[in-house]
Image 1 (spheres, rainbow, N blue to C red):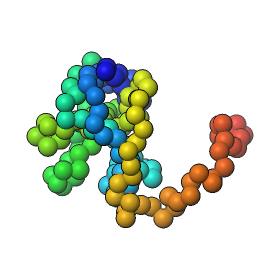
Image 2: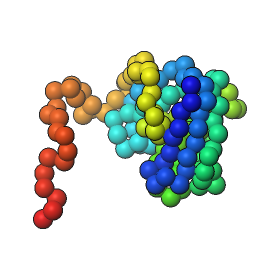
Image 3: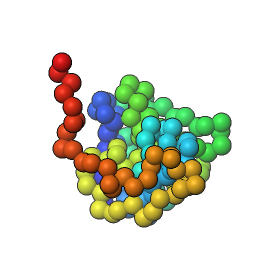
Length: 137
């Protein structure tokens, strides 16, 4: 399988060739800080290959206290991007950075003991097609 991906500003583009073995939603404090959200949604592969198509020089890597929590991101727009971990043995790809369809569903939520207190029963929260208030004033 071939996946194409990019950052929000479009200056960084990449291609991934291969399959993902895992897809997890991580609720650890670091992933919540990374994303500014309830969880990170990451794909994992020990065999897929990453190739930067454009903007590789804009990719920055942050390794939290050198303890293995690694985030790659575009230096212009801040979007999360793929990175290699465990001495290049594991490709970690933020699911939201992939531009084409992903044909697997998350396999589970991880680090749930660190879940945000507001991240409960979210299926019962109202859903809107667009922003539910007027910003044109």
